[in-house]
Length: 86
Image (cartoon, rainbow, N blue to C red):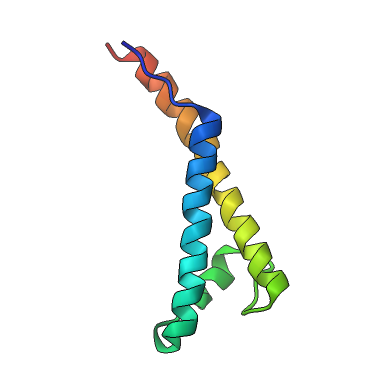
C-alpha cells in the first residue's frame, strides 16, 4: 500500500508552522530581550531588520515561503521513495 502526501496540504501546514514560529520568536524577543534571537532572523531572512511593521510582514512572508521550499523538496522525495517501498 502506498500513501502519497498531498503537496498542497503539506505545503500550507509546514508554512503555517514556520510562520507561527516566527511570530512566537518575535514575541519572545520582546519579552526577553536579553535572550533575543533576532540576529538569527537577520541572517535567515533577506531584507529583514529589527523591527518595523514592514519588516515583520516581510519576515512573516519569507517564513511562509521557507515552508514551501521545504515542501517542494521533501514531498516529491517522500512520495517517490514511498512508491518504491513494498
